[in-house]
Length: 357
Image (tube, rainbow, N blue to C red):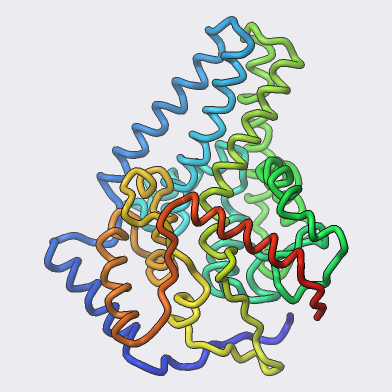
């Protein structure tokens, strides 16, 4: 879609009043939008656990323990990415720009390119969530029918069964295929890539392969085959944990997918669009919020992407209250289980439909 896409003006005072209430929250609590010391402490805890798990790979002798450590390493890598790197890419992990830049590179350290993800995430997904042709996160192949009006294939009736197996390879595709495709295919979000970013891509990918494959082969008790199996387990664990965080927020049975009109005009204002296309889940579970870096408070994140997730548990009740006041939808699933079940209900329902565009 090459037509410039625009949102109509806000039809009410929902977002204006919401911003005022959030600003009042900051003033009352004498705080600001950044994570600062809280994120630094969280980084130290998570990075410490990550490094400890990695080092243990070189000391244990049993292959089953090595496989377990690789799996834990995969999960910790994603927890580190969505808690620290994600915040940094939005510019709110820390008020110090140097620290923020360092935090954003945590994504590169676990193999995923931070430059392409920032472009995709900030300028694609956050600007136009669930918008056909504009949101790279809902770009799909014929293998999976996520969009209700996508072309129907006979095998889609089984997608709720085979999609979980595809999700196991999410991070493998991201790190080894998608990053390179984004760099060299140069889509609309990545038209002009600075030369230094190509250098960073190669250097960090090389470091990743060295740290997570070469060094364990050379210095751990594991064989080459065992290390490669461990690396696969790492990615399977990372993939499932990442999809657990990402999928329920926009792709569930109640999700709305939006198409601009022929003039590029969106049907809803920007703030209304965020509410309509985004779902919260398990917002009363503090452990889920801590582990997922506030991804479960996803409505707050989309309405205030320049605010650290440490504030979301206080902002979410304000959003709920004002959404009710202005008769606007607020989507919420009570638990991670129900949120993920809702996603698979979408897959199952879409698999039954024979609707074509």
